[in-house]
Image (cartoon, rainbow, N blue to C red):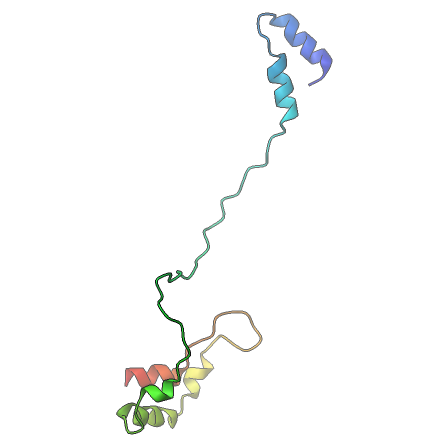
Length: 108
């Protein structure tokens, strides 16, 4: 606000001491409106995890356990149709897909 406009305002309204209000408005420019962004989807943090260690999964199951036969059986199947439908590919950002051999073995 120019000095002339301020003087005119004070002449029209002498009872209002608006000099402080006007100078405060001039000093503080209006901030641009903040856009509300969607909240990010995050994996929860497991703070009560007691132990983190390396595990050899092959040693968790005995040599003669039936799950080994299921894994071998599913490994011999033609799963190319399942692999063809996977959209996560090498060299492109995104989460890796679960191996169809694992999922079918769990289902069987």
